[in-house]
Length: 389
Ligand SMILES: Cc1cc2nc3c(=O)[nH]c(=O)nc-3n(C[C@H](O)[C@H](O)[C@H](O)COP(=O)(O)OP(=O)(O)OC[C@H]3O[C@@H](n4cnc5c(N)ncnc54)[C@H](O)[C@@H]3O)c2cc1C
Image 1 (cartoon, protein in one colour):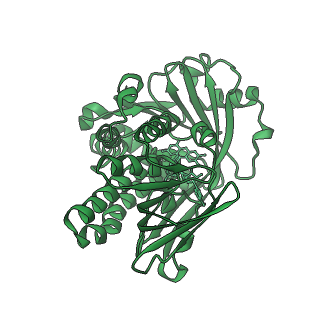
Image 2 (spheres, protein in one colour):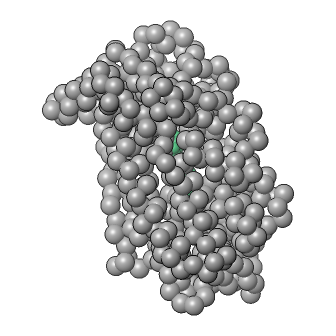
Image 3 (cartoon, protein in one colour):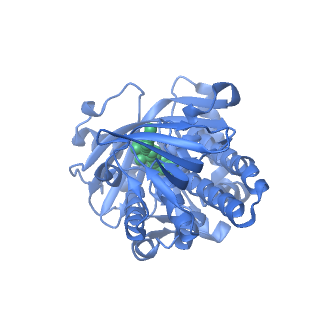
C-alpha cells in the first residue's frame, strides 16, 4: 500500500497535462494508464488548438515544439454546394487557431512527465476506485500480475469515454444528456504537402468532407460515412475519389492519390454527464463529455477542464479552500455546454441527411445567412477560436 495526493486515471492529454501542472505546483500524483506507452503515443486524433489551450500548454512548460512547429491559421473555409466562403478568424476576433496534432501534444507531455521523475504506470489493469464518498480514497490495480493499492486525497478521472471513473459514480446521482448522430467520419492520414492553406469544411450533396492537415507535409482528411460502414470497405483510391467529389472543384484536381498512413471511422456523438464531481472523484475531459469533432472542441474542452481542476486543487492545498473544489463542476459545465452547442450546430449545418428536405432548406438558409452576415460570422468565429477559458 502506498500513498499519494492525487491519483490520475488515464494518460491521455487530460491526465498527462493535469500531472504536469500539479507537479509544477509541488502536488504529488500517480498516473495509471490501461494501455502501453507506445499505444498512447501513437494514437491519431484531434489537431486544432484554441489560443486558450496553447496558453495552458505554455504555462505547463510544454510548448517549445508547439511554438516552433505549430501552424497558426487565421481563417477557415466553409463550402456549401459549390459556394465557398472564408471566415477570417483573425479579423473577426483578433485570435487564431494553431494546427498541432494531439499525437504531438501527447509526446510533449509524456516527455515532460518522464523528465519530472513523477510516477506513471502504463498497462495498469483492473483499475478500481474505492471510498470516493469517505474521508480518504483508495485505488486498486494490477500491474504485470501483481496487485497494488494506493491511498490518496483525490482521484482525477481522466480516462476517456469508456473509462472506469464515470462508471464509479452511482447512476442515480448522474444526469446524462446524449445525442448520437446517424453518420460517422472516415478519416485518412497521409504524408503529402496539403494543397490547401487552411481547413476546409465542405458540405456537398454527396455528404460532408473536411480537408485538414497536421503539418506542412501531412494531411488529415475526412468524409462523412454511414454508421455501419467499415474501414475495410474503403481502399485509399476510393477514399480520394470520394473526397475529390465533395471538396469542391478548386482543389479536386490538386488532391493526389497517396497511400494512407492510417484510416479509421469515428461515430459522432454529443454527450454530457452531470455533475463532474462525486466526493473525492473529479471527472475531466472525455470521461465527462463528448462532442462531435466538427467544431474541433474535444481536446480543447479537456484542456479547460484540466485548468479548472488544477486551480481547484491548488486552492485546496494552498488555501484549504473548499469552495474551489465545490466550484469545479459548475465552472466546467458552463463552458462545456457552450462548446456542445457550437459542435452540434456545426454538425447539423454541414452533414447531409438526404431524406430530410426541410432540414436541407434550413442548412441552406443558415449557411447563406452565415456567408452574408458579418454578425453571424463574428458569432461563428468567436466560438471556433474558443470562448474564454
Ligand atoms: C477516433 C477519435 C478521433 C477524434 N478526432 C478529434 C478531432 O479531430 N478533433 C477534436 O477536437 N477532437 C477529436 N477527438 C476527441 C479528442 O481526441 C478527445 O476529446 C481527447 O482525446 C480527450 O482527451 P482525454 O484525455 O479526456 O481522453 P482520452 O484521450 O480518451 O484519454 C483517456 C485515457 O484513459 C485511458 N483509460 C481508459 N480506461 C482506463 C482505465 N480503466 N484505466 C486506466 N486508463 C484508462 C485510455 O487508454 C486513454 O489513454 C477524437 C476522438 C477520437 C476517439
